[in-house]
Length: 452
Ligand code: PLP
Image 1 (tube, helix red, strand yellow):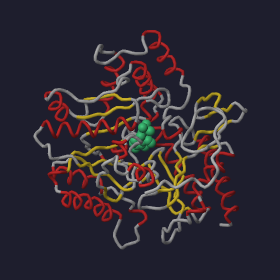
Image 2 (tube, protein in one colour):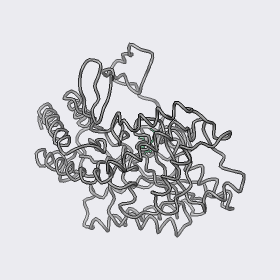
Image 3 (cartoon, helix red, strand yellow):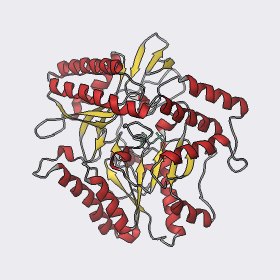
Image 4 (tube, rainbow, N blue to C red):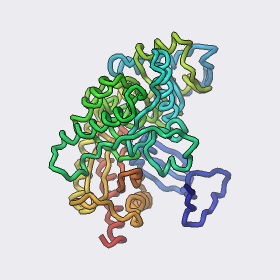
């Protein structure tokens, strides 16, 4: 395996920072609501909430005030030396709202840490309950669960993981339920069951006694572009995990905290995951914050065995948790979960309008304010040629017009380009009209360039 050199010449930024590519972007000045202004005076609509993170929108005064009040008390308290009230209160607030039983909370500082914490808790639970032979965590292909080694091990994307072959023990995968692109005679519900049953086949092939957990996003984000499985998929997955004594981990880092019009993405199907990871929306861009939620029956054996062998310096940080509490409070006060559901419908209508205009948009999907359009051949679902880079072009054309969207070429087994639209949950009908209009102009410009 070699790492292929980038084709373009790399030009370094005029500062000491480096990122994943030689991007030169304007310098941010300030942000408020759904808008970001740069120092050169440009205004952007953040149609993707950063990386689908700024659920509450920028600069909420109540959150800033709560942070200021906490900063005046203390910005830090180490969890092995002191309890802290914001962390206690945020844990209680989350436990009250999460599906029944998910009432033990552990805080971290981001999504990758949250996913790794879920996996480590699951593994320690297996050891503590005399099931030490269980260690494999089956994941989906494609999928994205984070950038650290443990979360990469369950990430189904060869582009991101191949360079680290040998350093990471990659976990087994099953196909993500991309039923929308299947061209067979099955109904959607039958397809949903077929995808779920692939998990059972994999479990049997691996040896059920070696399988610890299955990890999935209830509504797929970065790797699959707002992928929603057929309704039949969700209960069948639960059934299969139960049959084999396997823990079901829902990665709700992107789909959680109101993003899809329910607190959790899995709530649309009344899912009962065993462990849930959270991040992004819970800190909404104000603070680095993540969490895992698990029931007592999983946490207790681990604590009895000597405690969760895990933790980070900033776990349960009082400033981060004070912000998290204020964020949930503001989401309640402003009715943002309901707004996400209602505005999601308006956004989906707008995106369907774009699909009616552009024949190379083959699918429009999502829930609430986690939505995507996919570019492909409408009849066959064959992806558009990779060198057209249509997703990237749309992203760039939208950016030039002052709209931020999230585009990606799906890798790892399924090929295709998509653009995700996921504005902050405070978005209004008028904002959505503006977002859809600019996105339409951007797609039209790209279509003209490509002679489509
Ligand atoms: N899990 C999911 C579903 C994600 O979408 C992401 C980030 O995009 C992560 C985990 C990793 O989160 P972070 O970038 O905060 O480490």
